[in-house]
Picture 1 (cartoon, rainbow, N blue to C red):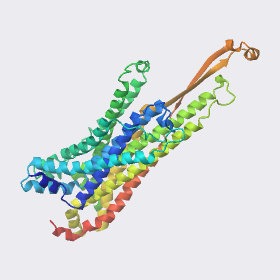
Picture 2 (picture 1 turned 90 degrees about the horizontal axis):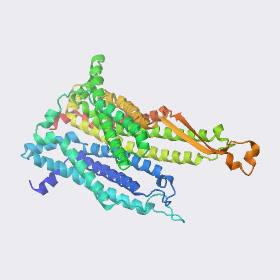
Picture 3 (picture 1 turned 45 degrees about the vertical axis):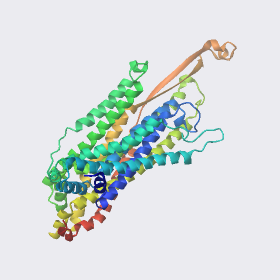
Picture 4 (picture 1 turned 180 degrees about the vertical axis):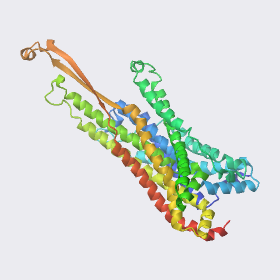
Length: 508
């Protein structure tokens, strides 16, 4: 097969295929933009005094911002992977037809690689263009040369090239691996539709991920590390450990939700005789991983959102404990020596920014879920049309779709919220703050005399508060995710009407 033929077959398809190419490009653009922003933060020199915000001047805050940006790129990569899977049933049939027409498995793999690779490459180019355009548009130095954003810092060239090449390459490899069964044989699609029994072992990934985070926190707080141990490689090991544990935890979350959906479907078959519930249960048992794949990004964002709410609660508690330490009677202050209201306001602004970003990503994830549900309905259009022709009311099919999505989604979102909270609580269970000053221990006359310095003694106090769990805010994150899922279900039910037309039985 010539390269021109592979290119033509890669972009031949239905409207769903064109939507997948567009959404994959958009996801890759967002991923490249976020990773370039993360690289920019890592390139900033702390304590330079070149920026207005403390996020880019304080060394400790800058390290936390860089780490948070790096971790926040994980759900972006999940989004790219999810985008590459849109329209999978229709694409599987098209690739199987290409195999039956005489194409080799390698040629089918090239068709998939070219389609995803070119789409992701276009998206990566758009992400780079948006990054440099943003640098120019947002560069607004003040009279003193200070900037609101680090638009004067550029990551090393090799880092930019690595990000631009790495994102399309990762998306391409992932898509080829996920479609390997279709590439091996043209009948792979048929075998994929058989019932799959899922196991509970992925829960171990959740446990290992959470235990790993707790272990990292214990190691970083140990006296050995606090007194300079592992000083040369501490930061690298910390980042590597956090990324590894986070990925394990998120993979365990995704596969655990599939197991919960599978067990819930089995239980539903035993306790109900409602047609809609029976249809949904049979659909889940036929492909237990379909539901968890469809809203993977929403689960990941729910976990990250809950972790962000837990982190914000710890930051608020840290301000409170430092204020309490300044007011300790042992220090003898008539009034607190410092107003931490500016720090609280700064952290509140950062919290609002995080919430805005989470809402935007949730909207994108909801759009991805909508396209996946519509494509799933198209893939089942013959079965659905046969049910309608046999007398099944369309309302029953609409309720069946609700059951099929909500049965794994509701417990999945709840578990994601708890997992995100526990992951962050491993580092933020308590907030410790202290203050110190020189206190005169002599009599009032001695303290007022010329030799008062002889009676000065440095007194420091330290207090520890337990960080409250922000169940209300975590519930708000979970509610926003569930609301997004419900809106997607409502939209997909409206779009499903064309798939329930009995005339679909005539199409091949």
